[in-house]
Length: 396
Length: 120
Ligand SMILES: [Fe+2]
Ligand SMILES: [Fe+2]
Image 1 (cartoon, rainbow over the protein chains, first blue to last red):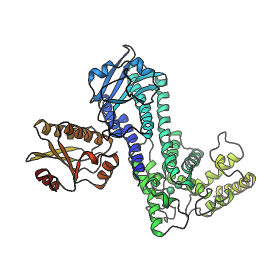
Image 2 (cartoon, chains in turn yellow, red):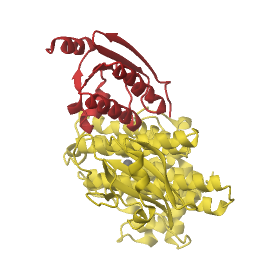
Image 3 (cartoon, rainbow over the protein chains, first blue to last red):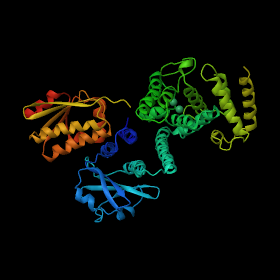
Image 4 (cartoon, protein in one colour):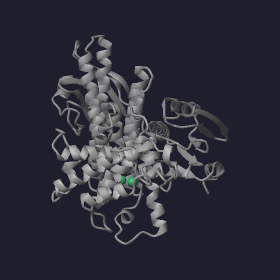
């Protein structure tokens, strides 16, 4: 694994650590302390401070800090901080107004139009400057802690701004999704041929789950599993992933490690959804037990696994790969149909055909699958094929 | 996420202190490691060996604790030696560029020999 990738994984797990610190059952002060440790540990900064803005007194107070002189922190003027970019890391340089001995970077914390406070960090122990990736990560982190702090202050106000809290929760989920998407983009970027694969598999899987009648929360979990199913590929060499000639048995074994790696990576993240790590782990299993990594069969495969397995295979078939041309949609559907019971689930297949058919017929306002299919496809032929399969699979 | 209760043991050998963290260095209880080192530093010890044989997992919080110890020792021109590190731990430190700020030895006795004689 290259150092860059290792660093990327370290940063991603830092975000998971941050989520863990924020949602832990510790009391507020311990949470805030953990949050600061996560941040200083992530950026290797030996000094750090989290400041909170009190609207009523128009003053900044230090929630927690290490390494700075308290008098320096007290001198900071909230007005000056408010004029900087929201949640945007600012390099202090020799700005006299914002000078705090030892501080190098200051990030004003905002939730929508509300100024919440600031995060201050020193330079890195390892001396090197903050990189562009560092600043991007710091921006994501700032968004998250701003929301966490704001939630806390709302709670402290004892005001029943329930609606506001709900909106904030939505925003937090939004950011969380943004992080996952950035993550998925990193996976897909590794392999020129799998561009947007994770994104499409997420969409297809969620569409199937919705048609199966799952509730919104469960659908979201399915979506996230789709996004992350191949995350283990981050640890596999680019040369191998982009190889044009057939794989040797050793190379095949190496590539097959990716689902187990996806499992160990996702298992470290505390998701609000059940089974994400199980689904990514087993997305290459088959109903007949001839899949990998555990050769599970039949009842051992959850519905989530069955959905992801079909969505993943369908997208793989309809995408170009280094070693083969892509299949047209009809052939791919025919291939799924041919491997029913041995590889793919009967019910999942039926539901997949139903959604796609509805999308083609314009019965679904926001199609998830259709927009990603080959534009040259003959939709009437596909629809006729789907109707045939639906009729066949619907008769007991 | 599973968490093993973190604890710290230590002993003195000549003018060095050897610290034994035990469990995952991934939450606030890792502060005990900083405190333990702080006690020895307070007694005038400038050579600290951290034996990682019973800690194979560290996250950003643990790294932050380690930064603190490195910083505290730097301020008194002291030395930190890390020994018995798992590959995962070594890889992490390496990737973060921490290796330049510590001396790394395969096992504890190597570190003690070095601190005593200045040689490997
Ligand atoms: Fe896969
Ligand atoms: Fe895949």
